[in-house]
Image (tube, rainbow, N blue to C red; front, side, top):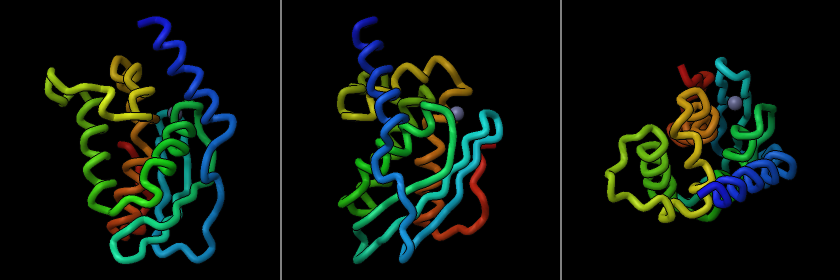
Length: 150
Ligand code: ZN
């Protein structure tokens, strides 16, 4: 388990140093701003949705390693997925990190998101890990107000 945890930490650090999809999208169809006041994480999320499919996604802003890695991994997961699929993944991930998942739930089924399994022990970190997903949800619902994790 400690080897796995080290590996997860490496993946998180790598994504935070070299985030995927870290760019603004000028002709985005959806946009939302996410803010986690507890940690100071603050990101903008840009989406292009065509016929119910997320065809492009990008983000910019600043935050801790976990929030940035989460935004990087979230964007690489949802790109090319339908809005419905993205919502399903969000719900599974959110249930898991907030401790609401079934005991039989296999964390490996979260794929890349399994790297955040360590945050379940730290409620403050859960907000960092889920900020990008909450922002995605609001962007898809076209809510324009700033998302906060409070
Ligand atoms: Zn944070």
